Amino acid sequence: MTVIDADALTARAKELFAHEHARLLEGTPRSKALFERASASMPLGVASSFQAGSPYPIYLERGRGAEVWDVDGTSYIDFHNGFGTMAVGHAHPKILEALARTAARGTHFAVTTEPAVLLAEELCRRFQLDLVRFTNSGTEATMDAIRVARGVTGRDVVCKIEGSYHGHHDTVMFSVVPGESVLEHEEITNATPMSRGIPVELAKWTLAVPFNDLAAVESLFSQRAGEIACLIIEPVMMNIGIVMPADGYLRGLRELCTRHGVVLIFDEVKCGATIAEGGAIERFGVQPDLACFAKAIGGGLPLGAFGGRGELMGEIGHGIAQQGTFNGNPLAAAAGLAALTEILTPDAYVHLSSIGSRLASGCERAITAAGLPAHVIDLGCKGCVSYRSAPLTDYRDFLETNADLFDASWAWLVNRGIFMTPGNEEQWTLSVQHDDDDIDRFVEVFGGFCAAVSGSSA
Ligand SMILES: Cc1ncc(COP(=O)(O)O)c(C=O)c1O
Image 1 (cartoon, rainbow, N blue to C red):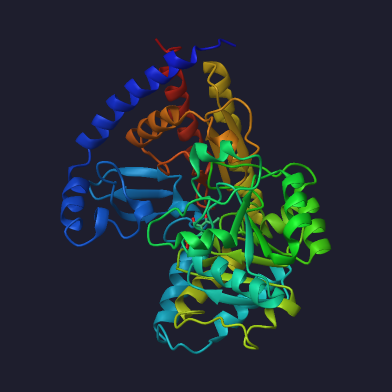
Image 2 (cartoon, protein in one colour):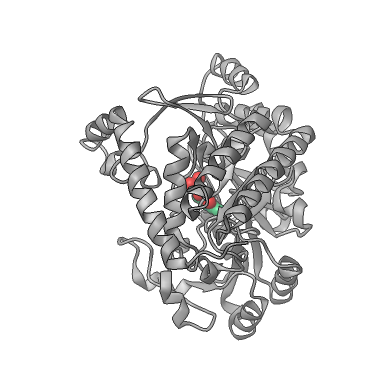
């Protein structure tokens, strides 16, 4: 395998990005026009800052199956899939049917309806939860789970993982993108908030430890367990590419939390219902005290949920508040129920695993042939290419990934009809409506990128 000089590769990636990005802007005049209009009514011209782009984002018009169309009429195979929400694919007939049937009977009552009850039963079955409550987003799910943990334990401190994202409520907006500052600390950090508008004093309630470092958790708990309500963690980190838990790590956390009376919360907003029917709980065989869900469980509608042990969840309504006008909305519940019981069935996971491995092995071959410093993670429905030779163990490793290579690959893929999440912290999401041809097209285009950036195609 050829070893490419790192500086030369970065220079080539920057050059390629400049060329591809200019081409992308040329091909998206209607997105530009919509951006200009949208900027007069919304900051950055978008509904959420995660949807912003530089100098403007691509605005989509519609989607069907594995395909989406932008406002310029260009079609793409969708590997972005709503940041991991659309495991069912776009406009799935069963989702459309559930929505039409439900909408015809009224769209909202703020009273619990039968679909919400059936969906609660399905979530309890899949994820082995005693009780569950609904929210409208992943942010609300993690906020409410932390509320329950604090309420039950009577403790205030929250332990999270360095460089992890759990939504945009104040408690978890520390150590989200800490950058090089983490390298100044041995292990336990509490950092500046990710946003202005969050009181800096709140930092004292949120402590962060590196992922995959049991010793850091052990030492923190032995000093301060009496103050710590919960440890909230993505069992597989999915906001810095994908970082797998080391063998025994999750089990070790389970034991430490049990020993110190700390509530273990799994944030399965991205991995629940994607990486296995029963999410990370099933895949890694470790049961948390509470777990949080959103994205794929709603079949494309805004739906979140959290749940877990009866002794904890049963305190809701007995001194612990959890509520919301739209919680359990019939449309969201009907879409979630159709997604989980009619579409994301055991067969679907066999399909997702097969196309996921086809995509990962195709990318791996292209990387090896070009001699690029990159690796691939395959979790079936979810996967990614990270531009660092060795897999990541934590956020500190993520700082070593080559963002220029990612940016160049992103623009190259989009220009050739592969719609991907912008930003090397994200990953692809496959849907039940993707087939081998969609995967092979990605591999072909990605192979072209690897050859071009490494100079092996010249
Ligand atoms: C792991 C994780 N938790 C929580 C959230 C917040 O979910 P939402 O955007 O639905 O509020 C996200 C969003 O990307 C996430 O990735």
